Length: 259
Image (cartoon, rainbow, N blue to C red; front, side):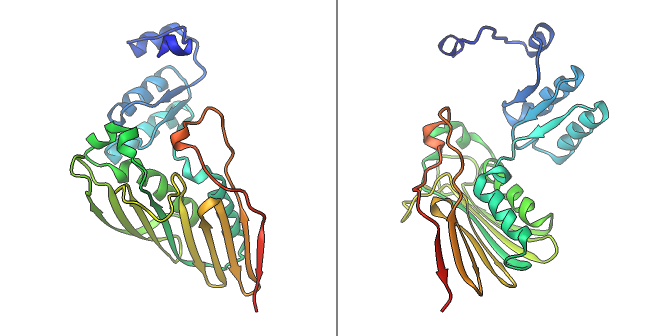
């Protein structure tokens, strides 16, 4: 791979890399069980560190990683990228504007027929799969929109017989001040009427209206004045993996007036 992409220096020993190279930051994209090792290594060398999700298997280890960075004043970032997606940022703006009032219930869906194990076969070896791989993003997006969870109930299923972990999860949470959130995740690979991978869909109902993230990254905001619909597609990047690239069809904003 280094030869194919013109990478000048390759190391089998990370400590040697730290000693010999002048690094701007470290990005730990390794297996979750090794995240703590590389974060502490970065701390020892006073280097900012980015850590893949989830941070660590047990909460205690994740807490130690944060403490080490705080005590050494080393910046640390975790790749929870759903909250930074364009339509989810726009949904946050809708909620903050008060257009639909105080949300009292929400549904967040990431249900797809995409053959994820064909693209990333190692995921089938995880003892905990969908909550680790996808739940990290979906549940963090819920925290971003509604605040911390006061209660949580979850049921999981394993549909693929050849994998070790769960590939379907349904999570019910009481979040923020008064919002009930249903988060549904599934990689069962059943054929869907419309495949939206890798898009996350949402429906949020407030005391004065509702807001919805629909296919093609459209957001519908419905109040007593009618429904305003507009697409908020994410940017496209030439380097993105085509299997995970966003897909959308551009349409003009549509306004539906109440009768």
